[in-house]
Length: 247
Ligand code: CAA
Image 1 (cartoon, rainbow, N blue to C red):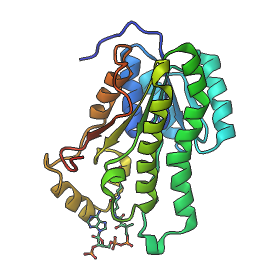
Image 2 (cartoon, helix red, strand yellow; image 1 turned 180 degrees about the horizontal axis):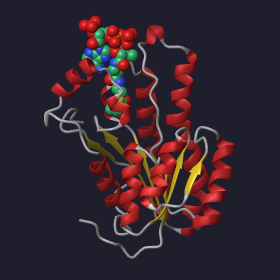
Image 3 (tube, rainbow, N blue to C red; image 1 turned 90 degrees about the vertical axis):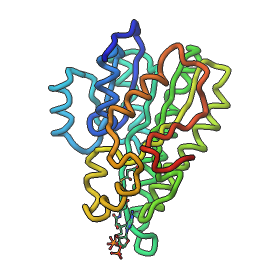
Image 4 (cartoon, protein in one colour; image 1 turned 120 degrees about the vertical axis):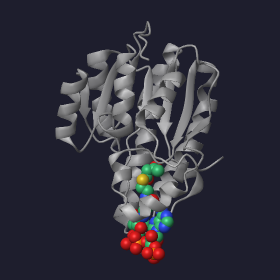
């Protein structure tokens, strides 16, 4: 079911051209929102995304870099208008047991997965506050709640997002801005497909629904949270994990 919503809202999805982000971008585009998708690494995927979806507003910048975000957001707003909705989705893994983890692997993940949430939220929240409307959704992970072998860096960033969002939710609660977190479990994405098959098999065997989740399941929840009517859900973390971790 795709329903067109009467809206002129502008939504930015970081990491919005692949995986969960692409699904969010596409669904929101179908629903009638003005979508900007950002990406960093994969030019080929971004080109294909643009051609297939007809979403023109695709911007390449590093969400881990505050100055790059400032420039990127200025370009988005020049093209689409003020940003009403931010989805902090961009994320990477650099898995390693801690006893072998390099400072680079630690820093890369904290910068891309957590500093990005500060950068993008900091640069959009003032506008949202002043206009009396905003939605900020950040994509955490089951592993930010449960912990995961080989992911001290990733889990630290993903649980950091939750504390950040609860605090910001309190700050902006009286300003028409809601702030929420989605914590997906193992979803059919390139990130999950990159796990060694024998390890992925062990992981899937522990998911009560016995399969990976779809990216559309996450996009659906985003659509619910960003709706103009939904002004009472804030500071919450939504687990979408097939029953793998019940928080
Ligand atoms: N579950 C169960 N067992 C695991 C495991 C896991 N998640 N991760 C590692 N192990 C086990 C291995 O099977 C192996 O067991 P044996 O000694 O019995 O063979 C043991 O731990 C050591 O593992 P490796 O031989 O692979 O050790 P390594 O140093 O070469 O690599 C690692 C370590 C980088 C952590 C690698 O095992 C790995 O990539 N594990 C998967 C990590 C993971 O789950 N990443 C999630 C990515 S998806 C994601 O992050 C999206 C999201 O939000 C959910």
